[in-house]
Image (cartoon, rainbow, N blue to C red):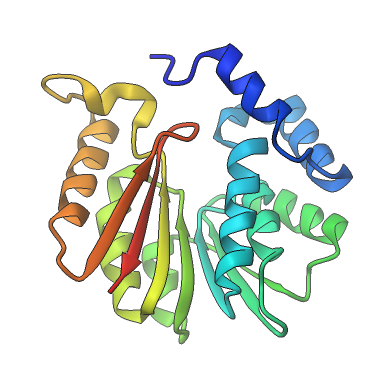
Length: 212
């Protein structure tokens, strides 16, 4: 399902501040060489993540799902002085690409890249999070959420990607492993009285979760 008509997407990109040279290169190289380039956050969503980070001014950010590093670069641009962004990538090859892109962006001192299963890594990160971006295995979204929420500060922000999952969460009934997991996650968070939520139809859907 085409959630956002192509003409609308092009129009939003036209009136969104252009990607700088670094993001253009990361985007281009990913699209040219990666079989799953559609996983890239991309221009408009990347700028939204950057804006949110600049508004929050986080000291500690957690990203679950690095891919080739585009979204981490965007999120890093709002870090407070001395801030750090921890990012977790399951695949060694993508992690290696992300490291190169962090070097390209000149942010290696601000990024701590972990390679492995996020469910194994997160319990050993002794941090209080100001901001969390979830964009990894869709089936595990609820587990990621439950792991990070206790260490998210009051007023902290979680952003979950792909919460519309190509429109498949709109089907009646919802079928398929990933859309069912995402639909369940969306409902689970909505019923969590410790947070407030806002779902946006940007790209493949973003769920903003604010801890009360």
